[in-house]
Amino acid sequence: MIEQKEKTACFTGHRTIPPQQWERLTWNLRETVEETILRGYRYFGTGGALGFDTLAAQTVLDLKRKYPHIRLILVLPCLSQTERWSREQQQTYEAIKAQADKVVYTSRAYDRGCMHRRNRHLVECSSLCICYLTHPTGGTAYTVDYAAAQGLEVVNLGEK
Image 1 (tube, rainbow, N blue to C red):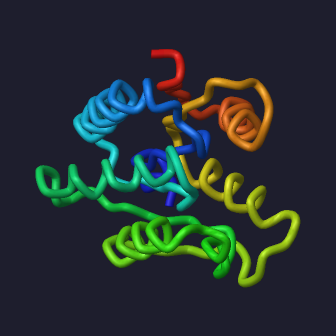
Image 2 (cartoon, rainbow, N blue to C red):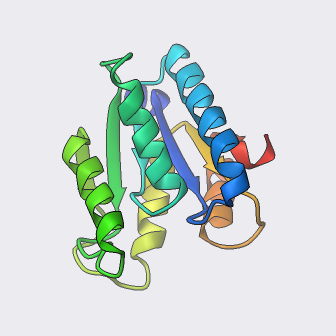
């Protein structure tokens, strides 16, 4: 299990990405994930949220064509995560979920702690955290701080 953790990277990031940052972030994310694969990482965990999580999952799925040995693991907070999302957002989520190599739910139903449990699970099963952090507060900041406190290498694409 420790060997798997050493080959696992997780993603965390903001749900909203400013349009003027989208193209550069997409390019930096792809380059970072590819470098990570070349370093021996095989497993990539993401939380299935809108924004950066979705972009990260799509990037891993796209890179699977070139690196078929990599795996996408979705760690989802609850079964009803998408109930308030638009139809288009739900369709994208379901398409990603259908292509994921593994799907883990940290809770069946939504409760106040399910997002927190999801984020901790992602960190605790990884040795590298690739993030998009641009504000010092909120769930992404908490998760990045937790990853650093747990000794994970942190790569912040929000600083590139």
